[in-house]
Amino acid sequence: MALEVMARAKGPIALDVAFRVEHGELLALVGHSGSGKTTLLRTIAGLWRPEVARVTVDGTSWLDTAARIDLPTHHRRVGIVFQNYALFPHMTAAQNVMAAMDVADRYEALRILDLVNLHGLGSRKPAQLSGGQQQRVAVARALARKPQALLLDEPFSAVDRATREKLYGEIIALRAHLAMPVVLVTHDMNEAQLLADRMVVIEQGRVVGAGTTAQVMADPEALRAMGIREVAAMLPAVIAEHGPDGLTRLDAATGPLFLPGVEGAPGTQVRVRIMAHEVILSRARPEGLSAQNILAGTVTQIVAGKGPAVTVHVRVGDHEILSRITRRAAEQMALRPGETIHAILKSMSVARDHVACAPDVSVLIKRFQAPICDQF
Amino acid sequence: MDWTALFLSLRLAAWTAVILLPVAVFMGRFLAFRQFGGKGLVEAAVMLPLVLPPTVFGFYMLVAFGRNSPIGDLWQSLFGHQLVFTFEGLVVASVIFNLPFAIQPAQRGFEAIAVEVREAAACCGMSPMRSLWKVELPLAWPGLMTAMVLTFAHTLGEFGIVLMVGGSIPGETRTIAIAIYDRVQGFDDRGAAIMSATLVAISLFTIAITYWLSARVGRRLS
Image 1 (cartoon, rainbow over the protein chains, first blue to last red):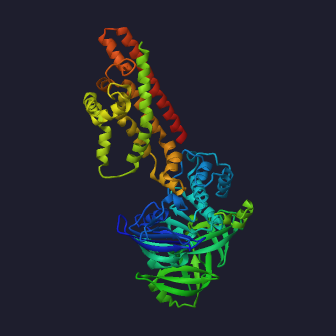
Image 2: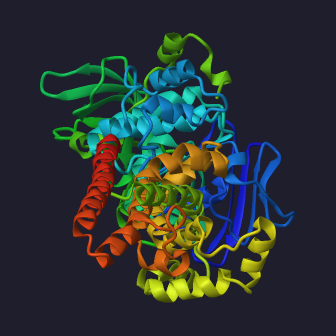
Image 3: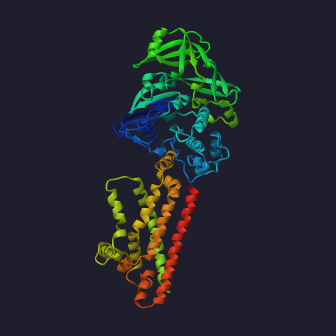
C-alpha cells in the first residue's frame, strides 16, 4: 500500500532510486539541482518515463516498465504543485480549482480556497494575485483533484522569505486534512526539516541518505552532499509571551527558549530548527554568559564522521538537541554517553525562517465543521 | 464597381479561412509541441508558398489538378466538371497557398503556452482533447485569430495564383483583384480606383480588428 517508487535510468539524468511514502506522510526528496529529484516527481506524475521504473499507489500500478504498464498522466490521480505554479492564466482562482474536479462544483472550489486561506479571492485571475496567493491556488487545485499522491515541486522557491514562513505554517496546518502520501521536492534543508516526516537525500541520481527527518538531519554522512553545516535538531514549542525587548519566550519540552522576532499569538505552536554548529556544550552550568538559552541534558550518542568534528546528541526532556563540536574538544571534555551536559544556544543564532508556526489544527477543523480528512 | 467580383473574393476568403482553421489548430499544435526528425523540412515545406512565385505554384497546381492528372480525372468523374478554372479549384489552390499564413501564427500561439501549464492540465485529469478545448485554445487563440485574419486578408489580395488556376470567369473565378487588373487593362481608371479603395478599406478594417482584439486578450491575460 501507499506510494512506492522505483526508477532507474542512464540519462539524461542518471537515476537509481527507490522509496516509499505512507498515507498521510510527508517525504522530502532533497538534493541539489540536477540531482534528479524533480525527475522522480515527474516520473510519479507520468510526465517522464525512465528506462526502468515502477510507480504503484495503493497496490495499483501507474507505471511498470517490466509489465508494460504506463498510465497517461490524466488517468493518474495525482495532485501537483509546480515550482512556478503553472496556473491557467485565463481562468479565475475558482475556475482553476474547478478545472481539477471530476464534476465542476463552484461551492466546493470556494470551500477548498477557504481552506488554503484564500477566502473571497475566488474570482481573481492569477495575474491579480500575489506569489503566495498563487501558490495557495496551486495547492487548492492539486487538492481538488482528490489525489492519491500529492506532489510539491519546490513550491516555496518563488516567494519572498516572509511569505514562505507563512506558507510553511499553512502547509503544516493543512497536513491534518491530508490522508494521502505527500512528496516534497526541495533543496532547502530548513524547509525539509520543518515540514517533512521522512527524508531521502539524493545526489547524482542516487540515494545517499534516508530515514526520519531527525535521523537524516543528525547524520553527517547523509548530509555531506547538502553541507554538513545543515546538521540540526527540531524542537516543537509553544509561544509563551513576547517580551518588551523583542525577545519571545517559547516553552519547549527542554525548558524555556528565548528567541527574537517570533510572530504569533501566545499559545501558538511552533517548530524551531536548532543548528548543531550553533550549540555549545559545557560540563558545568555556565554563569556570566551572554547566551540566553542554557539547557541541561544527557549525552546519548557521540557520532564521529570522517572530518575533524563529531556530532553530540543531547537528550533534553523528550527531545534531542544536536551539537557539532570538534573531535579535539570532545576528547578534552572526555564526553561519554550518559553524562550530564549543558547545551548553550545563543538567541540570535536562530534565524527567523527557522521557526515555523504549526497552528493548532483543531481550530481549522472546527471552522470547516465537516471532517475534511475523509475527502482528500 | 464589380460587386460580383467583390463577393466572390469574400466568399473565397471565408471558405479558405474556414477550411484552414482546423488545419491550423492541428498542424500548429503538432509543430509547436512535438519534436521529431525532419521537423525542419516539414516547417520549410509549409513556408514554401511564401517564397515561391505564384506562377510556379500555379503551374504545379495546373499539372496536379488539370485535365489528364489523376486528381483532375477523379474530380471530373465525381462532379462532372474539371477542377481547374472553377471556384472549387480556386478554394483548393487558395487553401494550399495560405498554409504558411495559417499554420505559422497558430504554431507561435501554441508555442507561447508554457509546458508546465499543459502538464498541469494533464495532472488535473484533462484528456488531451479536453486540455485542447479548456486550456490550449483559450490561450493560443490570439495566434489562431491572427492566422485566420491573415489568411482571409491575404486571400482577398491574391492575384497570381488565381489568374493561373482560375482565369477570369465572371461569377466563378473573377475575384476583385482580377477585376481590378481587367479594369486597368481596359483603361477604366475610375472603376479600378473605386475597387482598389474598397479592397484597401476592407483589408485595413480586418487587420485593425485583429490588433484591437489581441490587445484586449493581452489585457485579459496579464
